[in-house]
Length: 374
Image (cartoon, rainbow, N blue to C red; front, side, top):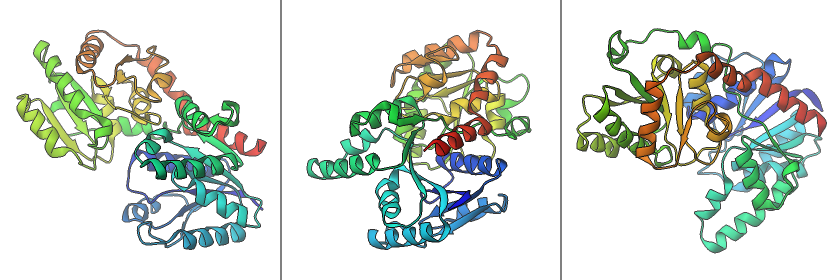
């Protein structure tokens, strides 16, 4: 066994929040003296661009098996061969590959520890399947999670969901929050931005961030902002890529006559600079696995409000101690929370101290402790 190698079995990278978590974790392992393999079914253009800026201790293992074109057996054999050849200390597999990782581990001669890392409420996935298919998938899910060497959930809510689905004891599922706060976050937050809304003397900016997807429920945030705008001067900026709902959200902005004060800004390489200069950060999601952006905003010293969605926000904010929580989909309550936050000063130091609980350093130590005790 190569005790200095940890493998991360991940989906193809597209630049989303999950990818940032993977990269943060990989670099944290390197800082602890480990080598890291990013094992992927295929390498995307984004992946290639990212690798150019990573330390040489992080390598890509391309199985060269596009998800949409490759049968399960081929992926299984290639992953087994990888485990036999490299024999890493642990293979951390995201939930999409629970069966593949376990099956390959069982077939392999490697003593590698197979660990499932669950980022989402898996029960939501089964709810979308037909009855027969759901039962088959659920049976497979239960079997492979039960036969894993370890299970890590990114929030207590996710851990409870897995325990309920699998009938496993909650004590057998380790909760480790995402590595969010990097060593360079503070310096990135201080970088200048050219957006005119952040110039001196301009109205306060309410910031949202994430892909324009129904899960993020930016429609509720826009409706909440319309109520905020009736009471005071303010602006709403939403940053993020993957514009699934861009046309619908732009139409809503138009219908509410907010064109001068609300903007879908699109993707930015440095969201932290915008977070640091916003007056309030608002998360309006219907559900999350964790809620990385809340931690990022708090790390920059920006006050936050959030829906009390499954799951993560209530854990991050300690049930409202570090920012107001409102019911999912309740734009009136969200508007009230934003207005209250705008009108009251927040102790920036307390927010930043809370965010330090989610640093790469601390999370990597928790992962390594868990791996070593298996």
